[in-house]
Length: 221
Image (cartoon, rainbow, N blue to C red; front, side, top):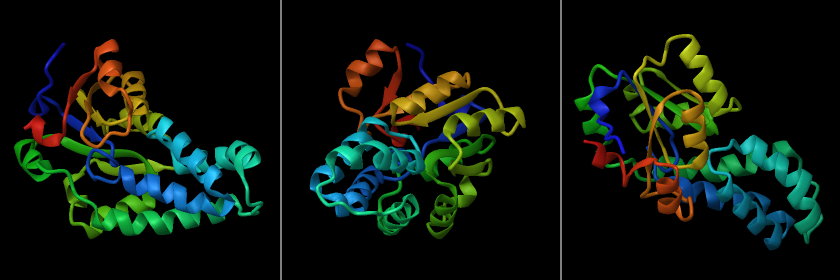
């Protein structure tokens, strides 16, 4: 299995939740609370779906909830719209994103890769991400841009490669199966970060797919 050294890359691409911020549990709890008006069974089914589909945007997850989960699991027949669910979710998430931990070693890695372009490519809401990163004082580290939904990671990577914002060689740092799939489809090297990931049986999955993994960003230094 190859060894990936961050300083060898022209571009470093980071997922946000579970990579840059310890926010996976924040998002999971927000999905539960936002859908709880439909009943505990529906809210838990939403959490299960969210965890099984890490890295996918909230827009698609809530659309799936209304089209499938709410029809089969709801015990309280609420009539919340997609927009209302998104607003409830965002209010729960925003507070958590401002207070959760930033990955140890991130600032040192930025100092050690002064010539690399850094990007965020996340399933999180783009406007929300840019605001949170600015408030937390880390937005300027990502000089290649902070990108998120409603565009998918596949769409963002294809666009930024086409406009040469992503300079090869490029490395994607992620914590979900979708991160790996998106990186592979775009022709990027990939390292799976395990410490905050919600992927179950990640070690078996990584070994079966020959995926390089590290605990966290600090171990890339």
